[in-house]
Length: 493
Ligand SMILES: [Zn+2]
Image (tube, rainbow, N blue to C red; front, side, top):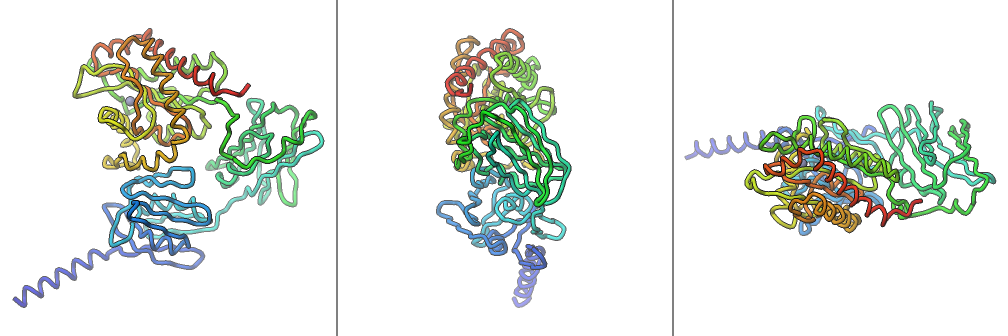
């Protein structure tokens, strides 16, 4: 009996020892070290959210009742939802790929991806070092500090303040954009994008690239003469825009940076589904979804370009592999005003299933919509960051809904316009408009729809999809739906 107890005791000690093999990670900032409890799960290190909050000086507000935790610093916060890998950060949605784990009365977050999300919240720059099990926190090394606008008698002056002199270039594109590229420049994209701007300026975009940074400033009026030079004390790029008809009242500042109501529809993103390594659905006669949708997308692009009112960006115009995240990034980066993803449907269980259908993003309301979303979301697995068990489930949409709500009505309207035309033109069954949780739509910060042209798994529709005339009709239908939408919303002349 005693021996058995000894043995059990030994097993317990051994068990405790293996459990604590990696029980501690660190947060290091300027020589100070804070310990952070961790656990290993598979290949991943998960860190205690309580310890992270303490180390970074953030307030942690965790309410298991609402299945969410809020990590706040100043006015900004990260909102984590239990069982979901998505994190809301102000108006953005971040994905840590794996959901947080609930252990020992604490939440544990995946170190590598959560550190990236946390980097948005804290003033320092964060980096997860897996070998050292350390979050390194360093001062940010921004060298593009600020941007000022100043009214002048005959125009306006833009000043970009730098830490040191850096090589740069300034040019105008599409008549209304002033672009400033700073080589070796480092800037806080968020700061510049949300900076208060004068009324004369329609939009400010800021991009951090590997080797350079870019600021793009869009004016309401066509830019005529301008010149630029470098000034010192402080080091700054000065751009003067000469406009003798300039109205100084236009320099009143606007506070609502995100609302750009008068902007109209300028940029349309067309997203042909799948591509490259990923065929999408394949029909009984071998027709591949990726080929059909590219063809229809190209026809749609040509129609929109002929119309001439909008700029068209294709997420791909060749047969190449793109993750859903990359598609969304292209759309957001290009400042799209509408996003149209084009697909062809399939049903393994029901080879007779047929018809066109248009979706907009929302939690799926029925099983058929959910099945279509599952099918299209499978592309997630192409992304190395995703595992097949990453659920793109309804819980995620608690957060996603918050984000897309402002576009929901418009997305639904656009979907209805398009589906109406598809029904008239294609002369196949119309499955109507539905809502479902498409990953590609939920990261896109603009009204967005996903069109399923027809069923490639249905023999008759596969044959139709193959036809150039049918593809043209589909493109015409989508174009007309979009046109109706633009006519209503475009106040830009
Ligand atoms: Zn598809």
